[in-house]
Length: 398
Image (tube, rainbow, N blue to C red; front, side, top):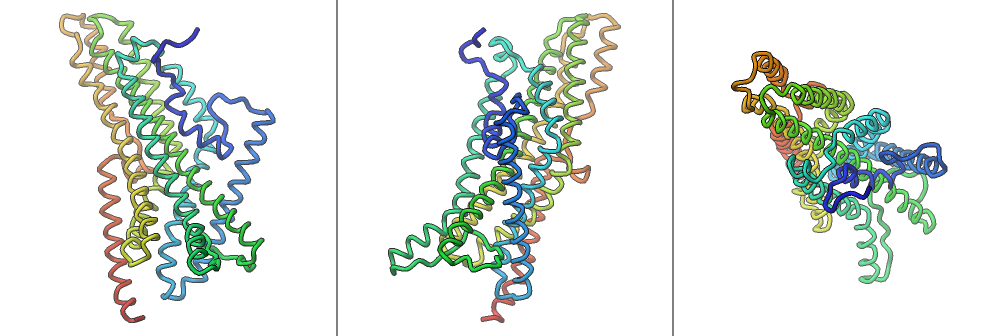
């Protein structure tokens, strides 16, 4: 049977992250395993991981070798956020890879709960949810793709500009990394440039795809909380069957929230801790008197980092708000005049739903907008300290 015109499909909510997953060889939702295509995708994924891991190792070697010289301080503060970005992208994609079976099962269960008729989708606001999902995911994806290709290709633009200015190639690489060979040689330069571009692009896709999948799942959970709230509010007096169905959905969604918390909590902690440092260092680079091209690049990096953390906190906060409405919706329902047994059952539902569902960073911090303000405050404190250390030493060097 063909879907009705305008009907929102479940896959629409996860289409954007799945496009990025396909780019790095992660199996899509519902895709068959054991086929030739699946094996090729697996080879792509592990080769991408190997190249990105190699980039991270030689970035660390460069950092250690340059750390003893204060004159390289700007290089170090430019390299450190890139290292943090790459390391965090590994943590994120491994969270998905290690929990691939659980995530697939979670998506199947959310798919089973998803409303599939035009009447239900209009009633529960599915169209609005889907519109928000598409706008946020598309905008975030465009921002990160512009960011990574700015980093990857800006040296090439600079080289071409230099060639037309003085007729010579001043070879540059996108990132500071240590090599045991002379990468300036023609053949070596092309391979080194390509491997750095591949590593940078892969890191961005690791980062982006995982965050988008997380946001999509949270949004689908919020939709289910809204459905339960609506049905409790509209339930007829003494409609025990409807109440039982609401309880069933509510318990299932709570279980899914707990599973999402157990899977993503470690990576959220790493994300929050590293983001404070990354935002600080990127902000420092943007105010350190660098070239206009580098300034634009790092301002874009700063905006992307701020948006990324905001999205996680925004959707964590959205889950808190969505789950907290259940007892109020039950109270606003048509329970007056109902039987005592129905009222007692409804009271149990209200008591059970007073525990707000929230995501945490390994219990150290709740993922919410309040956490976002704390991260910004911490980043600014680090930034102030870094500026206070750098400026006197810069004057001494001069």
